[in-house]
Amino acid sequence: MNIQKHIEELLESHGLKKTSARIEMLKIFMDYDYALSAKEVISHMKITHDRVTIYRTLSSFEEHGILHKASEDSHGIRYALCSHECPEETHTDEHVHIICDKCSQTYCLDDVKIPKIQVLEKFLVQKISYTINGICHACLSS
Ligand SMILES: [Zn+2]
Ligand SMILES: [Zn+2]
Ligand SMILES: [Zn+2]
Image (cartoon, rainbow, N blue to C red; front, top):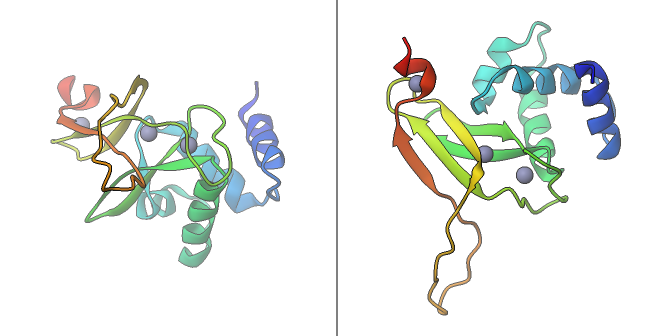
């Protein structure tokens, strides 16, 4: 399917208006195989939008189950596309993420599910994340 059409359908299915900023941002996410911070998204955008719009759009995509938080570091939150339809508000794509020690990019391992962890009954689990550090394929082959 044509990318433009795919993005428009994605926005439509989540009840989001097809604004040029939203379409351009999702195109950028589809162009990269690693998670992107707001700063990176802004630097890849051809049209200049104000930073507030970008930050607001990223969190709205997260609320709608289009993007999920892949990692968080001094560069801020890095978002990645959800591999399948996540329901609104809760993400069901609990997979392992790998952070490259060389380029510090975060990659989704969509097919690697987080192993089941026994949690003490005294705690209420809010979110589970599982991160591996390593060297990514791009850095290995350069
Ligand atoms: Zn998700
Ligand atoms: Zn790397
Ligand atoms: Zn991910």
